[in-house]
Image (tube, rainbow, N blue to C red):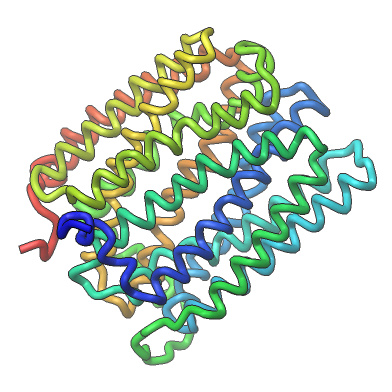
Length: 409
C-alpha cells in the first residue's frame, strides 16, 4: 500500500479507536434503520406531516433539558462507561418499539415515549462521543480520525436506511429487532475499548460549573460563529424530516424508495469525508465552511422543487456532501480549541446546537409543511439557509477570514 494510502488510514492503527469506530458504526446503522421504520409507520398511521415533526420534537425536548448536565458528566466520569450505558438505553428503546408493534398499537404515545427515552440517552452519548475522540488518538492523527469517523458515520447513514427499507418489507418488528441486536453488539465493542482519559479534579456540580462550556464558547467568536451557523442553516433547511411524506405523496415511491432517499445525503457526505481523510483541509477553511452551507441551501431548494425521484436523489446527495464540509470544519475547530478538562461541557454546547438543528429542525419542517404545504416549506427553508449564510459571513468576519485551524502550524 502506498504511503499516501497509509496516511489516509493512520488513525486506524490505534486499536482503541478501531473498536470505538466499530461500535459507532453498528449503533448508527441501528439508529438509521429505526428512523426509517418509525417515520414510515407513523405516517402510514396518521397521514399527517405534523406527526413527522413531533418525532423530532419528542427526541429534542429531553435532549435539550439534559445535554448540559451530560457534558459535565462526561468531564467527571469515565467516558467509555457513559457510552456503554447510552447504548444500553437505546437497546431498551428498540425493544419497547418492538413490543408495542407486536401488540398492534394504534396510538402514537408509545412511539413518542420511546423516542423521548432515546433522546435522553442521546443527550449523554453525543457530547461524550465528541469528547472521547481526542482520548483515542494522538493529536497529530486527530484530523484523520475525524475524517474517518465522519466517513464511517455516513457509511452507516447509507447502509442503515437501505437495510431498514428492505427489512420493512417483513414488517416494522423485524427492523426493531435487528436494531436491538446491533445496539447490543455496539455495547460489547465498547467494553473492549480502553480510553486514555486524563484524571480531572472532582468538582461539586453547580450552575457555575454547568455553564462553563457556554462561557467558553461565548468567549471564542470563531467557535460561536461556526456552531451557530450550523444551527440556523440546518434548522431552516431540514428537508430530510419530510422524506416520508415526499416519498409517499410527491415522488410516489414506497419504503424502499424512502430508504434510498435517506441514503443519498449520507452517500454524498461519505464521499467528501473519504476525500478529506486523504486530502485534509488546510487552507481557507472559513470560506470552505460558508461555501458548504450555501450549497446546502441551494440543494434544499432543488429538492423541494423536484418531482423526479432521480433529481431528488442527486439533490440530496449534494446536500449531504456540502453539509459534511461544514461538519468537518466545525468539529476540528471546536475540539482543537478546547482544553480536555472542559471538553465534555463544550461538546455538550456543540451538541445542543446540532441537536436543535436536527430534531428541532424536524419539528420546524413538519410545522411549516402543515401550514404551507410540503413544497413551499422545503423551498422556504432553503432560501432561509442562504439568508443565514450571508448574514453570518457579515457578522462573523473572523470566521470568514480564517485560513488555518488552531495549532495546525
